[in-house]
Length: 184
Image (cartoon, rainbow, N blue to C red; front, side):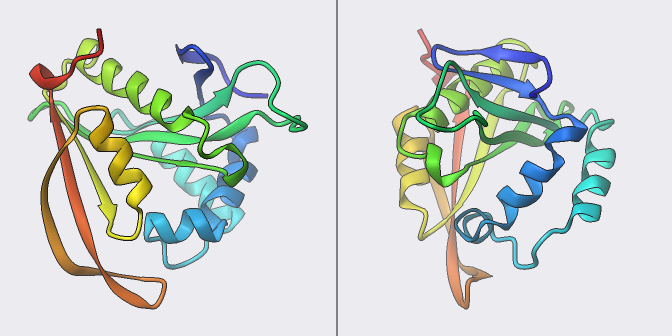
């Protein structure tokens, strides 16, 4: 059962991550399609996920929320689709980095877009953030298209700066400023 709703969209809610979600998080970040896109080389076990949860759940610099699909979703009893997070939140400079992942069964339905729009709107309207940033590996074209489709600007590329899934890859950087956000 997801924690309390923090943000509500048309088809999803963003809920707090609770202790009972740790198994989902562990399984999610260990899914090859998530782990590789996130650049996580080593798998994460339950103890590591618990330590991460305990460390970040009390941090004022991290906001991690579950993406939960409203209503029924096909034959899935578990509507927890994935995670979206701000890490770190730098209040001094007014910047946040955003990252997200969805379980494969929930992809290509617009849920990541809705979650990203909710979080970006929250950053600008509630957290008084000036800039939201994202980093994406070159092979994750869907994520790059998503970021650009909601207004992020491609700002640069670090060539072959990451070793992911047996090869060097480029990291693409995106940014969105508060006055560029057209949520209306």
